[in-house]
Image 1 (cartoon, rainbow, N blue to C red):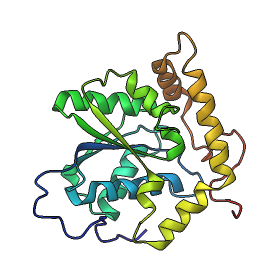
Image 2: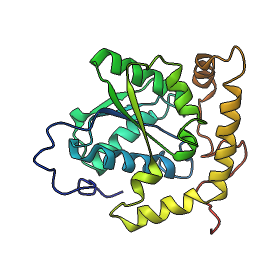
Image 3: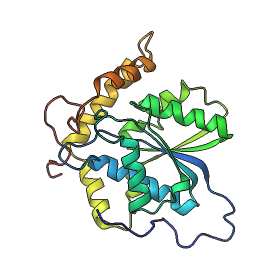
Image 4: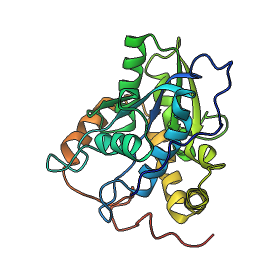
Length: 241
């Protein structure tokens, strides 16, 4: 895909803006697509939303990406692919991207992000993910907020911004249309059900997200579908609204 000029919500930065609004933002990754070059549609939209939220350094000082080799050792890590998308396509400076290639789940991503926050003294964080991933009703019912709570973030302020909200006013009409179509697709309804099941399972006594993280590391060793379902349900085949 061709490179674009750096994207931002506002032009130019106001003189009174002395420092970024957030110390760092975490952009979540999603299933990769075997029908494309690696990154699926949701990954590309999430990366674009993160670039908008970064806002050429006015929105956040750092972008954190942490995802391992979800397709196995013969393929690059998803984290590296997303970092390249941010740097090459959206011109996010290399030094503004913190790349880790260790996480194999949402829990792994957040654990890494919180660890970095504590190491660097960050207290104001931004989480960028799709709305159904961050939950409903002021984020009371969502897997991402629940994982943050279980990672001892009492002294850290976490703000949630969905990919959909960030791309709602995107200057690129094609990106807006893709986001809207995806939001109201059958795929997103299936994904909402998947997230709801995960949220319920996480409330079972004795649930350990670290066990899920380790399981993903041993089972995700080859290309798969861009879907939570075991059969073909490609995100690119969306019915009209």
